[in-house]
Image (cartoon, rainbow, N blue to C red; front, top):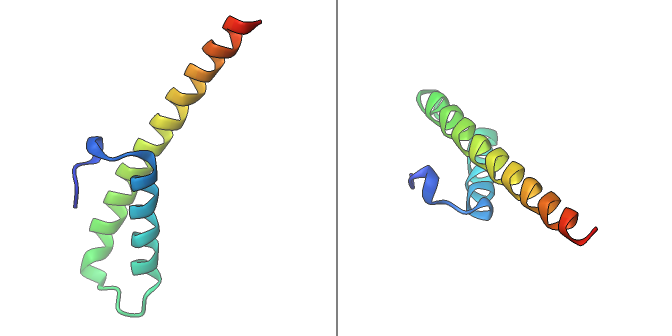
Length: 66
């Protein structure tokens, strides 16, 4: 799995979608469940951080034009 900080938002979402597909599969190994869950939490934190940062930057830009 790629390092978390090097991923873009779209890459993180794509990896999350892959994990969801694996979890929904009948072939999902129970031994991988913890790994998938931990990775999902990392990716969700990254996405949340990027969304928050983008929101703050947009607010600042919009304040400048008012």
